[in-house]
Length: 141
Ligand SMILES: [Zn+2]
Ligand SMILES: [Zn+2]
Image (tube, rainbow, N blue to C red; front, side, top):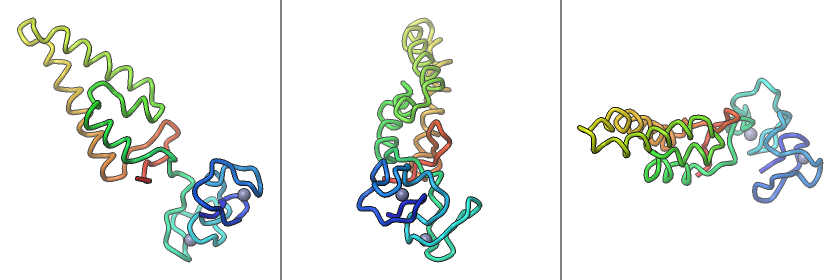
């Protein structure tokens, strides 16, 4: 990749650019994929067609997908993405649901919505529409 701040080519996806000290994906001056100059308004690189990546999350799409699938009801994927507020809501809904499911199935009132919510998050993660707490899209597998 290329540092989006200074345009230097970097190996791998380092957190900090060794050349300029900025976070490589936080800049807006260069394409992360081919190093061509971009502007803050660039959405698609005109040279290589890459999506200007200022809004791509460093979080793993695979981890998000798996967490949403297996532990989504408990908000695990949202904790992972730093969305602690909604994660806690999902966790509490699940706890409320499982602790009242034995009382005439009242728990389903909580479990069905949180199940649908987790499933929607799972779909969003799979198709690359899920976002982290900073609003960056989870695209990298
Ligand atoms: Zn740099
Ligand atoms: Zn490019």
